[in-house]
Image 1 (cartoon, one colour):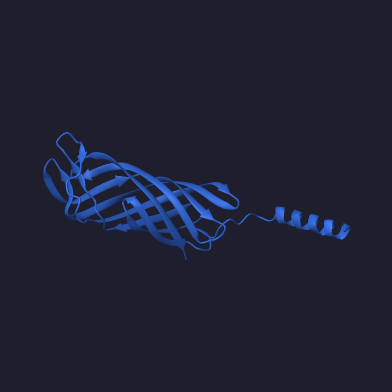
Image 2 (image 1 turned 30 degrees about the vertical axis):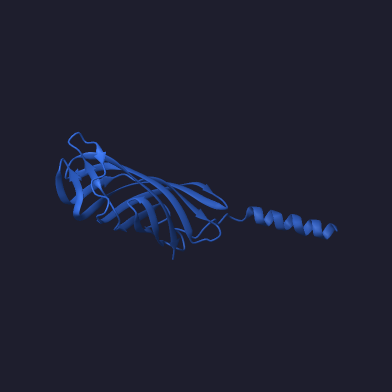
Length: 179
């Protein structure tokens, strides 16, 4: 019985002293692909340059309808058209928790372009392209099991630079698998 207690004590001590390796996301698996819902709804990717820096990008092709009246109030202008959207961001990440899961926060800078026959309506004018400068801020949750999965929530306030200068917020909830 003394041997079992001694072996259990040694095992617990060795387990407690080893470093916590919560996930392979961003270390041995630097590239992830996934999906994001809300705005922009898109197929997304992320590539870690190192543990703290990453490039984030997305391609979307679902309904977008940025319609504003002459007072700048948003309304639904056409709920049946399709538009194409791309976004690209540089992200800086810092860990909040790194144990059985890894919770990081990130901040970055980037942009989004929307293309389509009616990509943007403003003041009863149609525009086939729109440009949005954005500052994404979010939380990334990577798991110990499976070690290749990341879930995130991101809020990206910014300005529509073209056609009108207008403040807006992108909100995305997504999941990525890392390779």
